[in-house]
Amino acid sequence: RAAPGCSAPQSVGEAREVSRPERTGPVADYEPVRSVWSHAMLEETAPEVARALDRTLGPWHRVSHSDALSRDEDAEAGDRDGTLVWLRDYAPIYVRGRYGRHVAIRYLSENPNRVDLNRALPGGEGERLPLLHENGNLAVAGDLVFFTERIFEDNNIDPSDASLVRAGYHPRTRREVLAILAERLQVPEAKLVAMPTLPFEATGHIDTYLLALGPRTVAVPELTLEALLLVTDVTTREVGATIASFLDEQAVMLAELGLRVLRPPMLPPALGLPDDVVGESSAHVDWNTDPGEEELVLFTPVNALLSDVGSERLAFVPSFTSVAENHPELSALARRYEADWVDMLADEGWRAVPADATELVVMLGLIRCVTATVPR
Image (cartoon, rainbow, N blue to C red; front, top):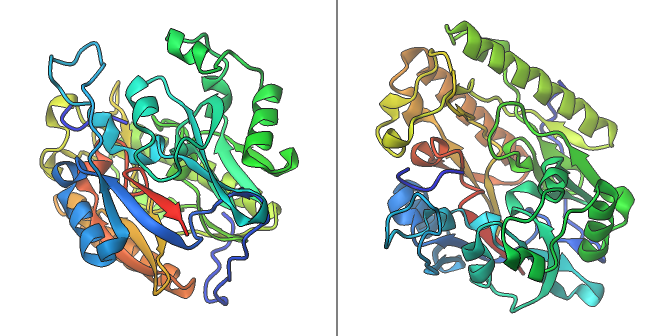
């Protein structure tokens, strides 16, 4: 993700699921939380999201002020490390050990600042996972743990930094990575589910297309023909069609695992933005230009923050209506799709809180990416 400035059938209306904590394994997003964290930089990066968290969560919302200078070779002297706003990707994995005790599992990153500052959330030193990882690439539904094939690619490369070697990193085979994950996350290896990365999407994270709403219910976006036909550029439409087929295939596979799969509708992908306009007006978003070498912007509704704070179950969902307002043909669709998603979540027992995600989506991240939760 860029630093700031640079078909299974739809199933709705069923009874709310009650999450029953497993004896061991990672804590799922839908389970009760003690606090929700974001980074102080979120206020300048995506103020609408920061205000929505403050306004809705009140004392449950905590802000990390951890800071560091950028170690990017292209950064100017004194520049802050803007990637720290993506708190999810260096926050610990909370694993429920025996007797219900939570253990904070901290992992490795090629960004040394993330390794140094990943103690920003509660959990002390916790335990170490000697693998390169980003927590946007982890989703839990009941006893199943999902991630994409990216984790195998990341952990089969020669280390770029001697500090990674000292921390226990070395290239590992797929079999070795699975064995380590099973042992540290305290789940049987058979419950680890590797999924393909979404085509054309830059992060390779599972949370771009999978959200677990309960132990047996997940959401995978649906990119409909109705949405694709509103894109006039042939190349962009073909890319969208590829993504649509991919999402349908994953929904079917998840249903075959015995999960109930919801299909919230999503807008078609758009052309990525050059660095000099990231964070600028949504008027720059172009659905009808040949992508060429640009990144593809994905308007996924499922990169959302689930927050069961005890008194209420809240789902902070990305709103794209302001992005689409410069494109009349998509504006009405964006409003309708958002309302459909809000209704779907309500049927599952979650009150949706839409928050304008314009600034985040053009930097290839969304609401789950800039938040992290500490389980109760």
